[in-house]
Image (cartoon, rainbow, N blue to C red; front, side, top):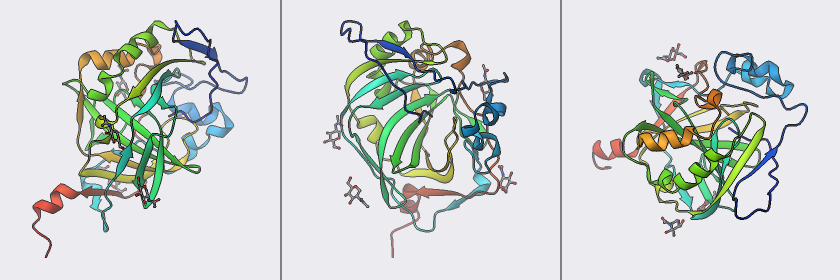
Length: 277
Ligand SMILES: *[C@@H]1O[C@H](CO)[C@@H](O)[C@H](O)[C@H]1NC(C)=O
Ligand SMILES: *[C@@H]1O[C@H](CO)[C@@H](O)[C@H](O)[C@H]1NC(C)=O
Ligand SMILES: *[C@@H]1O[C@H](CO)[C@@H](O)[C@H](O)[C@H]1NC(C)=O
Ligand SMILES: *[C@@H]1O[C@H](CO)[C@@H](O)[C@H](O)[C@H]1NC(C)=O
């Protein structure tokens, strides 16, 4: 998950619609995936500001295990209110992200409105459900003051996803732009409709964890939607194509849950349980 402010220098070549800039600061170590020296086991020692990645006790992702889920005492509807908004498709080197250029909307989480900043994908999924890993995971990153709340959607390969449908041309443009570890490439994608992201959700899992990429900040409120969605094989390939080989698998391994509780809200289930007395 990208949180460091990265500077994009627009090239001003409107006909190209693609810009790319070196953003590496001398102290800006590069993290990776896999078993290499910059892999997840070593993130915490690559940069003093990333210590929590290996030293934290409430890290993400985790396995959401059925036996460890408890019903939330006081259910809260995960209300999300997003408008259609202008967006930019970004390859930051380690994932593909849609960054919103203007206020796009909020999610109501633990009695506060968090505003949506960006959404990005990981492949395969980072969270697992009862040990099952899915093909992809979308992270919708919301922020209020300095705190994050991430809404995650799991995907398996199948039918095309309507949100990704709007991004296919942009992804193709992005793939033509080479992007090395310390570069960022971006393509404006115009106004994206919010329907697929807003789609209401009856069931979700809630726990407290961290960002899944350096600096691995803790205190992040996670909401993992219970409904697994689908994207087509072509969409999955288009999401991977712009990334360098080493980042096409950009899933952080499961972190110890350390006895954290996972709550479930299932409004559908409550209805089936019978009418309120
Ligand atoms: C986007 O959201 C706004 C309200 O939040 C709604 O009025 C509008 O119809 C939505 N657009 C689409 C295409 O769903
Ligand atoms: C959150 O936002 C909704 C509209 O999107 C608003 O109705 C509500 O009052 C807000 N709640 C808080 C606690 O700010
Ligand atoms: C991708 O990462 C996952 C999770 O770390 C791992 O299980 C899988 O084997 C990796 N796949 C490839 C092709 O490297
Ligand atoms: C359930 O939680 C306990 C206590 O934290 C843990 O030891 C156990 O491994 C968890 N079960 C699964 C399947 O993750």
